[in-house]
Image 1: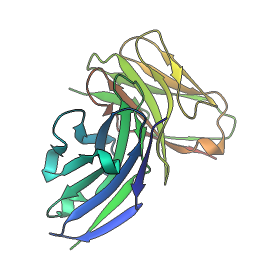
Image 2: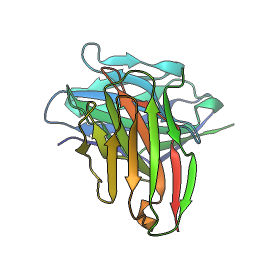
Image 3: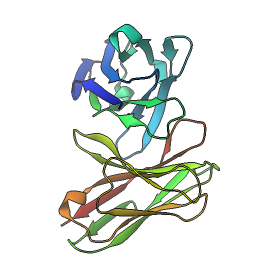
Image 4: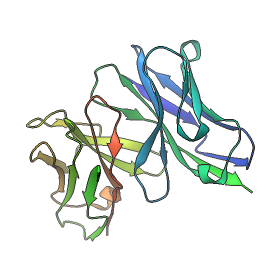
Length: 113
Length: 110
């Protein structure tokens, strides 16, 4: 079975500071990994995904994530936070060819002026 | 291009009432999904349909039924609503792509 753990239900950073949102997964087979973002009163939008190949994945809005198999992690980073980054972020995992995506509990990101 | 459309956006039910949440996608996706979102619990899969004519249970199917009406439409039915079903419900679809989500239905059961 697969699972995802997001460390920290709420992260607060200052505008211009580094954003780091942590995600650890468990999977018995090589996983596909995703980060989604949810703005208030909206559905989830894909930020980035890792399937195979390069372990550093770049996404939209300046975000990136690195797949580290030895640490079973897929942390999301952005060098400089912007007020518009305030949202809830979800990490998710699935097996290749599987239908079901398993989501973490979510991390709410707050940006302080 | 509308993507995934959910109706209604908001609904209040009394315990024991029934209702159907509608979902339609215009991206010709094969697979469709229903999730519920609750604070601190992320998104949990209720039911999914891998292709037209098939449906399967997810993590939390109790109290729900689904119908894959055609390739575009996938509805979620609550036969006898309970306060524990107060949640935000999301429909999503995909083929080979990542999931595309609707904007959700916020359901309150009193």
